[in-house]
Image 1 (tube, rainbow, N blue to C red):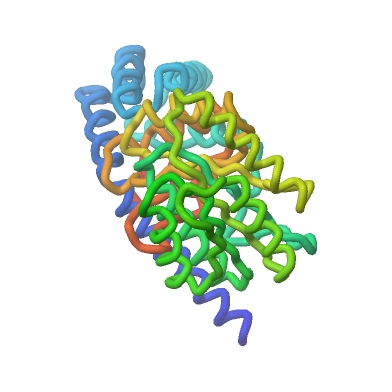
Image 2 (image 1 turned 135 degrees about the vertical axis):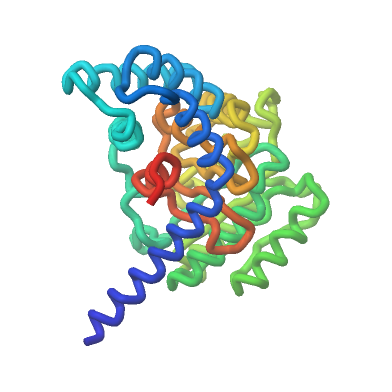
Length: 328
């Protein structure tokens, strides 16, 4: 009986997440649907004209030129193999192609399989260093992650290593109080590496499961500030040789292709191995998630589809693609 009840609640939660995802992607979905509808106007089957129109639809939805060309080439192959593809089937074919590409890009990373906020329990804290430029929602993302990891039963410690922006330490403290987790801090202007060292040392001492390190918002064209990230990583490794387990780059989805450019620059400067794409609920540029996954070969682990704590969702490629391209 207990198993049935738990399964029942999980289904309700999954449905709620899907509804929130649909709601958060509404602007992007509307834009994509309008463009696809125009692409097939007056056509009963998918032909070269439809594919040409689709190419324009994807590029203008911030999917990116290179990724768009891949999608169109694969659709073209499917059309050639099946001889006849009706326009009514087009959206399902698009879903199939995009999911194939995301699967290849992400290589079935853990982020696409998780249903909950979990980390490997190895006896030492799992350290996530969070990076990104000012204004992308980095500190807010850390707060939401802290709340959800804590709610999943993990002991969480936050490190306020963004010591350059006046409000960031206070903002992180507010999130710490909301999530009922500890915040390790020093005064404004302190050495960020020293804060990171103290945080990891404290987390190890108290048996924390998850450590989230905030860092200063860095413009992607300032090499000196990027080098500082290397220093932060090195001092953490004096306490935990494996740290950081994750370098999470937060990107603002509403900036479209600029988000991809930021991802490219950060990946060149530090070992980014996970992405969070925020603010998807306020934009029609959500297609950039597909382009970033395809081009960067770095897994998108979280997406932000609203302002609530649980609106920061673990990225589920299948549900994301179906939400964009299918009317269910």
